[in-house]
Image (cartoon, rainbow, N blue to C red; front, side):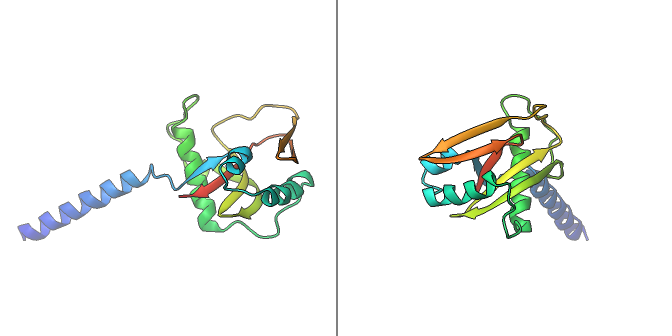
Length: 150
């Protein structure tokens, strides 16, 4: 009987520690478009296709896979919790939403994310970025992220 209780206690402690340590797991990394291009994660052709969707405010024809979306939201919550400035220690994945999805290119997912933790600047903003001759017009917020699974 004592052995069963001991095994149960060890199992519960192990399960609890796995649950707690799993809360701060990071699955992938975020990049800017320029970082992803300069690191060889995206090609010029990828940038041109992304520019087509972004510049014309078009939805990507395929939906973002739910498992990938969950990982992206988890990782953004992780980034918010561990930010050098304005960290929010209680940030959770359910406080992050995919505002816009622009597709998957070479295992990289292009998204705009919003969250309940960081305020976006008020008013309209118009930014053009030029990467190797490809111009992408970023109107307003939220920022554009490139996410890649590890």
